[in-house]
Amino acid sequence: MTAAFDASIIERHGWRQGAVLGPELIVKARNVKPKRIGFSESDWLIVTSHDCDVVNKQLEKEPEVEVLRASVSQSKKLDRQQVWGRNPREMQVEVDDGSNGVIALSLKVHERWLIPREYLVEQAPRLVLDNKTRRLIAEWLAKRFIRAAFPSSFDGRWRMRMKDWVGLLQDQSQWVQGIYLRLSTLAELPTDRPYGVHLIVAVPATVAKAPEWARKKPELESLVSSFWEQSEPGIECAGVDAIATDKLTLADIEPYQRFDADWISFDDDSPATPSTVDMHS
Image 1: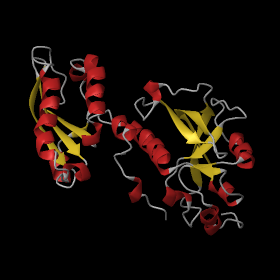
Image 2: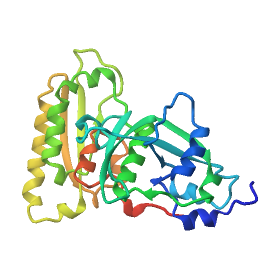
Image 3: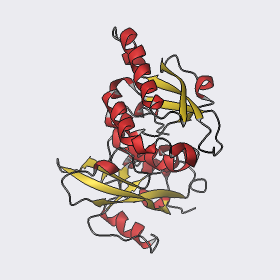
């Protein structure tokens, strides 16, 4: 352990997940980056380690933090295929540039590396991303490891209608916090054997308390059912249940898998994991 290391300084500086390195620390971080990763003078480096790891009092327990390279996009418009985490390898986000302006950053999931955590003692971050953006980046990275995996033969029976599925969820985004799907089997089935599916639509508890929810619930279930019925005979829909999140238990969703298209929630400003549950120490 370095004698100069003092975790309380890191905390006082305001380092946390989503903090952006200043120019002096960028120089140091570039010295330990993998050779395969390029870097330009305008690039940002964003801390992606969890808040608790960043400020951990013991250096030997958390000797390093992870940083993610972000390049400044030259385009004024974001690529719709790379927003809200829909692409598992590349993402674009709009952020405050620290000078009352807004810029677009391009991120690549493989352009990350570790730097000594001691560096953070030396100076404060250049800025810290807003809660929504840093949560989006964290969940985008996490999906590399926790996203659901479905049989290829199942995916092949519905993927050509992905645009319609995304359109349905976008139209109903006010009412949808998450989609969970249960398959009759995770085996690769021959074309003459159908997959059975059952879906749970997790509805934000706040909107489920609205007077129109009694009318909206069967309508939402019918819309989702109708989408999957169009995939017959290869896929048979066994039902759809729209359930408010305050009524939905872990036991209910244990046999289900989160069904990808999570970016719809972010697009509607309602991330799957609210930033209010963040841990700071």
